[in-house]
Amino acid sequence: MTVYAIAQLKMTDRAAYDRYQARFYEVFRKFDGRLLAADEHPHLLEGTWLFDKLVMMSFPDEAAFHAFSNSPDYLEISRDRKAGAQATVLLVKGFAPAG
Image 1 (cartoon, rainbow, N blue to C red):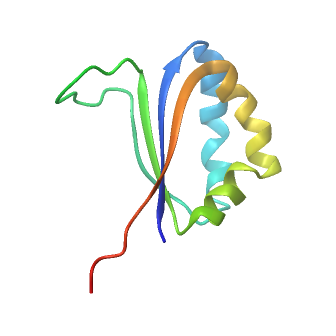
Image 2: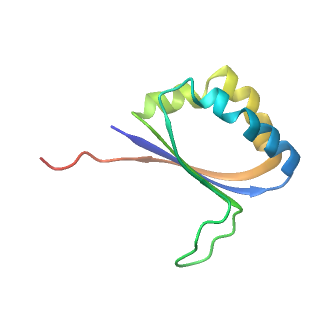
């Protein structure tokens, strides 16, 4: 079942985050995920949004997401993400259409 990783980021050290971002796709493309959105200026329609960036990715299943997020290459670059931004990250299960 498809899962979606949604990250809401509040920048704390832009240079560190930029180092992470520069290497992200090189690591990400090794896995079976799709980058769906990465927006530093989403259009707020309702409520309050206290972040600086939203990132959405999809993976075929939860195992594929964990293979990416626990890979040695991602763990290495994620140090810069953690140094560069506070994050709220959600893993959301998709659903199969009724049939």
